Amino acid sequence: MTIPKLKAPKLTFNQAIAMLPKEFQPVERASHRHKLRANSTMGVVAFSASKEYNDEKVWWTSVFPPEDEPKITFWIIALDIRGILVLPIDIIDSFCKKNNVPKLSSGKWSIHLKMEGQKILMYYTDSFEDVSQYFISSKLS
Image (tube, rainbow, N blue to C red; front, side):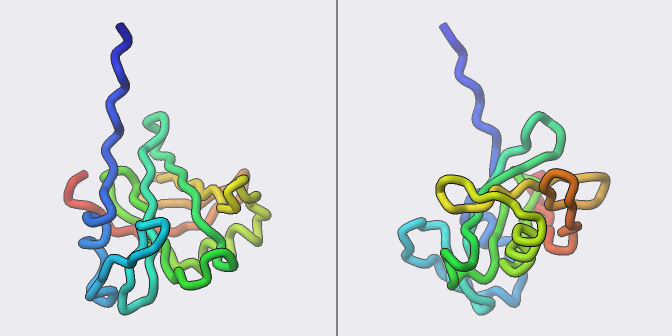
């Protein structure tokens, strides 16, 4: 009998929304086909979560480019239960275009993140961008 792997813990959409800074409040879940969207005073926020891969403090997820989802202003990425990155879509767009990040078959960019010391870096091959300023730590980690 095979023992199933335990699911790695990740923050939920509701937990991540509750962690947003005051300037995003009030936040109201949006009815959208992807369901993980919310309307805020700062614009539409989208959510995705990633587990930590290989115990190396590395995460990845995928995000829609702004031309495919023009209403999204911020992408919230939960880094397992450590916390959330609240990335302006312009930062993601600029990094991906500048570094020729290829799109997946779904049309999304694959976003790779890693923690080095106290820094959180968005990376692709040998290109890095420090996105630490957009990180909000969770009380669960």
